[in-house]
Image 1 (cartoon, helix red, strand yellow):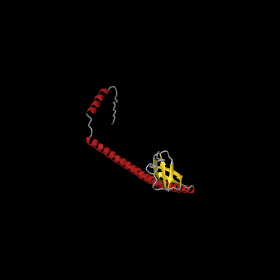
Image 2 (cartoon, one colour):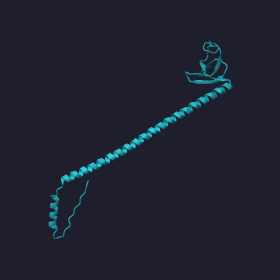
Image 3 (spheres, one colour):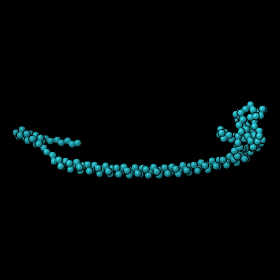
Image 4 (cartoon, one colour):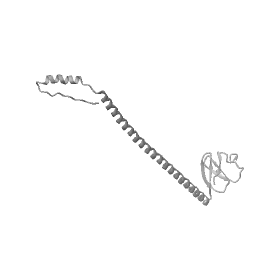
Length: 164
């Protein structure tokens, strides 16, 4: 938008005539439409060039951002792989340590894979049974089932597997 200000400066004696001429000039002013169209076209061209340059800069910034994100994702994945390897090695080391300690202490680990329960018990039996109170016993008799033994069937017994 534009603002044009015009004023009239004349002596008192000439003011009335000057005013008439001034108003006549304002009322009969004509603008060169070709010049206005050319000026508008030039302004639009400059704006389009500026907009295209802006879009190009924004695309370059976006491309750098995408490249940075891809690189950070790659580094993150590498870090995750490295960490997973560390955890795996640590778990292997820990499992080996536990087996060594259990062997020295003559213990074995029994498990119920259905419930995820694990117990460390003295070694020496091939089969282990655990009741609902956490009591256990071991046996080497493959056919023994405490669930049908009248002397101890007052509890719910579950057969656990030897983990070692």
